[in-house]
Length: 450
Image 1: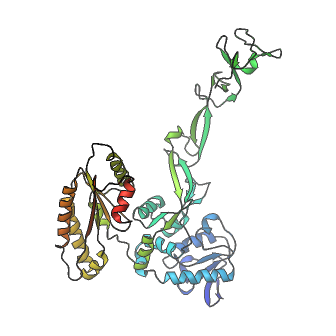
Image 2: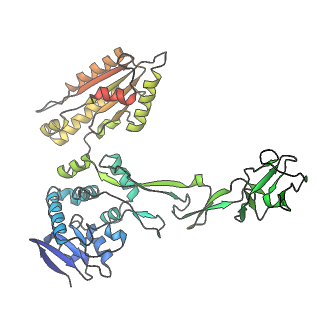
Image 3: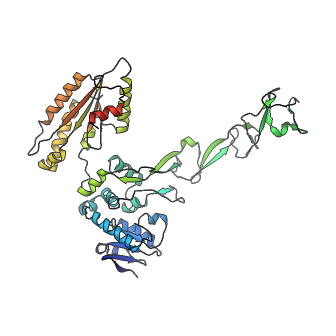
């Protein structure tokens, strides 16, 4: 029978028998204690799928399967420990926006991680399933509406979560290119007839006749003698040596140095080369400062996303190009270029004074005017702080200064009904500002003032 227990002034719902998760009074309790029973796994999964159950602390009094335990907040915890955890979680739950929790699955997942600051989002090994690794928390919170890999990629690209460090890589699994299954058996085959029936044997290479054969064929009456030319082989390196060939096929009789590797999907039967398999890395993920701020403010919208319309590149390829250009500029003839930093230090204050809708529209219009001044060959990236790095190839300092002046003039034309929008622009040019030890990262760091 399910009942309530009081622990240090906190009321917990104790589940000891099957009950419809939809009817459980989760809104009236601080947490849930689950004593394993038949169907407990499904009950816990459905609790996490409920709006009023996604953040509630859930504890197991005894272990269940690994998948279910990842939906809970501990197994066999002491009374003092689970009370302390629940109190800490409830303090953080007070920061969560109820309206956003109801509207956004992204927000629910981030809120779960926010209310459990020591916890990472991690994959769980379920070896008897085709995918091998699963994301039980995401599957429960999303109620099957979102595919976990795409969901993770979206949240990561938007900067709400990041790979945990150190040792964030949990596993690398290779999947079948046809059925996307992760149960692959790698088979060694004879490279001539594709037979699996071969043996590893030592071979001898006779220097007199140049023939190669199994060592057993060269042993005659306790001495080494070539079975092909009859020469007596006394000294290795002078009369004979051992070649690379060390395998012999029992079907076709041919010898070879290394077997051919073929991969057999145990789910669909496809035989394929190792290079054709689809590698997939599984990481642990952690909520970022941006994700924490999104939970606390109840705002998932990225105010700086409009900046990505300025011939945007992801930071990694952008920095690769910048490093290449800096390195190239150290070898004559020098090709001039400029690197510009654009930041809006009071954007939030501007949006608040204008009103979010009107302010966002004015900001988009400003970025639209900037985009008209940027050439097709110029590229940009965006930092986590919302700064824009703009790379201007084949642009001398004079040309960069002209663009800088035009951009600074734009900020004064932005409509404001309170706090005027400030736009700060800094610029470095090559070769004038390039230092001897600079690479792209140092060059950009000097521009940012790091």
